[in-house]
Length: 440
Image (cartoon, rainbow, N blue to C red):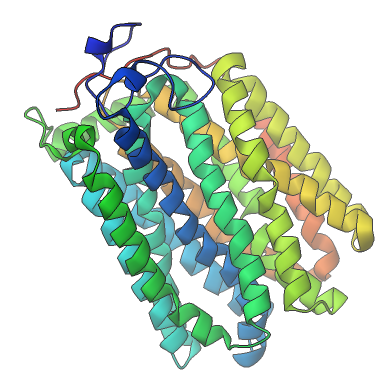
């Protein structure tokens, strides 16, 4: 992958090209013989992301039922979410390094991730006690998040000049699942048990994996991503390259900002459902609606924020999004219930996940051209998981000591710390690559 600009169709040997900035399907790739199939392949990867988030966020609507049926406390509920988050981060970090070493395995990793996630939630639904459920959510969380270094590595290489937009589009597909999951689970709980809903993940995972396989099979240019690199680095060289990137101030700052932002939202989705159930007496449908609002608005705003960062730069947009999260968390704390509270939930949903995509794009900019996409995504997710995994337990301890009223003030404080840290972030150069070279 090279820096530079080329308008020649002959320069486009990868799965997609780049030209007009209004969408990912414009530019030289449109003149390719297989342009339609290649764009469909990218769309298939992005669309399949919805399933992981459908169950990841639908789980938050199931959690109040588990809370009652298993006799959980704020601390044991926090541990459940912590295990899910930390296992996800560890899997993503290890998977990222592995997939950069064996880049020809990334497409296969997509199928494995989907199927293993289905198995994990199947086991959660079948487990008879809390201890076994902890082990099952560990598998489900790890398998689902292993998707990200593979998918984002592929998309980042395919569209380097529109990295912010494409990563945000991938995030918006996840946000669509974030909306569908809570709403569907909220309705299904009226007629079936939480165990039945979790067991249903297995056939859905198999279906999505089969459809993705059919789409990728019809995209000849994506065969380059299956080819083994002749100059593949040994693991030692891979780790030295990663160590060199870790010595850059920009990447270290991005990791710190991601961690503080993770502390500020690591427990928000989980504790929102319990807050509404325990303090407002809200049922599953109302909880599902609020959790859907907390993520659904980002379907539209996420790609807009990513598009803006490709043009205005990552740093000012990161600061603006974090500042907005601080303001909206404060509004949640001040309202607490009612229509204004619901409106504040929707506003928080507009920006809640935007900073994650921006930080991922910025880190990929730092590593541009070094074939470290999987490692960058794994490093960010792994580091962030330590913070997002700790947050649910931290909030659980705070709630046991001070009550649910402390919850939203905690979220606002953590995001304010992230804003102050982001002000120290150096200016970041975005990728100007507008064509994709041969991957193999």
